[in-house]
Length: 267
Image 1: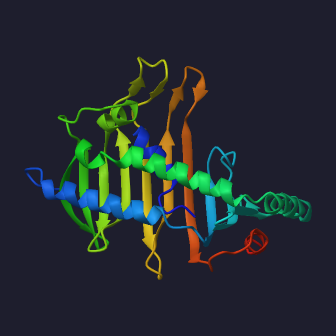
Image 2: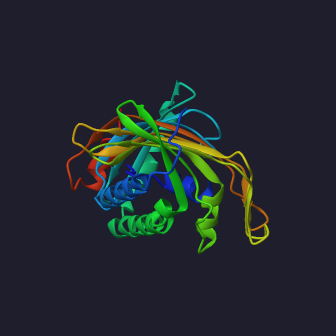
Image 3: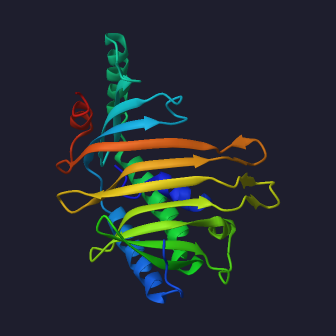
C-alpha cells in the first residue's frame, strides 16, 4: 500500500471565493504537511485492501484485485474482470503467479524500491512550497481547502521543476494533523523538455487523489485518477489513463512472511 503513491508523484511531476492577497502562512502550512507526509512515507507498509482499477495496465477493463503490501513485496490477486469472477483455470494461473512471487520474494529489492520512491519524493516535493502561491478557499468535509497556482517569481532549477509552471488546482489539508485530504490539478499549458526532444506533455492533463484516515491514524490514498497525454524521447508514449478506487483498507501485523501475505489475498 502506498502512503504517497507513485501515481501522485508522477502527477506532481507532470503537471469560489479566495483571499485577495497571498497568505505566506499557507506556504508554511503546506511545507509542514509535506514534511509529515515524508515522515509517514519512511514507515514500512503492512496493509491489505481491495483495488478496483481501470487503466492502460488492465486494458481498460475493470479489474478487482485483492492486494497485500508488506515488507517483502506487494502481492496482488486478480479476482474478477468486468464483474465476471475468474474461471477455475484463471484462478489457478493466479495461484501459480503468486507462488512464483513468494519463491522470489526479495526484501532487499523492496527496500531499494522504497528508497528510490523516497528519493523521488524528496526531489519532487522539496521546493513545492516555493513554486506555488496558495489561497484559502474555505472548508470541505472537515478539511481546509486551498487553491494553488504557479508563482511567477519561482525560478526552476531543473527539468522537473519546469512542470510546476503549468500546474494549477486545489489541495485539501486536515488540521491539526496537517495531512493531505485530497489534491487535484491540471496542466494549464503544454510543456516541452528541451524543445520537445526529450518529451512533451499536452495541455489539459489532470489528476485527482483522495486520501482517507484509517482508524489506526494512518492516511492512505483511496482514489487515484490520472488522465495525461504526452510523449518522451520522441517515440515513447507516456500517456496515462488511470482510475483506481481502494476499499477495505486495513492494517496487518508487522513482519508477515511472503507466504502468509500471498495467502491473505485469497477471497
